Length: 177
Image (cartoon, rainbow, N blue to C red; front, side):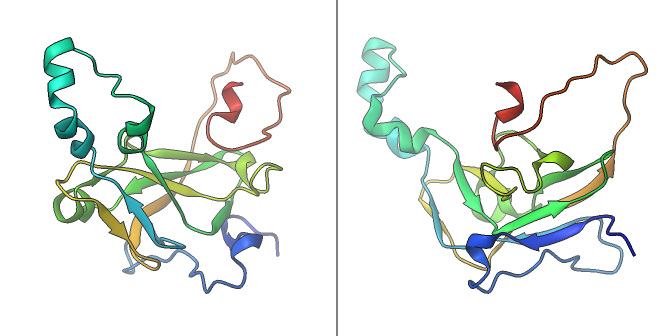
């Protein structure tokens, strides 16, 4: 029997008790993903409050290199990779409770995992969720916390698309290089 779609644990996490994503109910569309390790998602407001005078006086929003950690999204590893058909993708979505309970947002709205991301040479297709914390305190995501969901979806191609011979080499932004 050939495999159609599913999940596997990436090599680096084989011995770390990672759960394969699961559907929480019989009719759930999404597979719940858990964090593979503890991750701190810093509050974005800390740096703005700390540097309020600089922003007000000089209208300077650069805020220096030392503050960039607070202004970037945090990548939370899942320890999981996904395989699927060529005309499918895995859509990564936030849990509906994350914004209201944890003040966590996906800055890109949704993530798109293409079929050729699986086993790419850069990171083996390891799936990460990226978060921004708009709450007033740093948020600690603990290993095993459910952080997001993945939904396998088909997609259509245009009749007159120009074909590329490029192969995926890596992760975030690698197809745009």
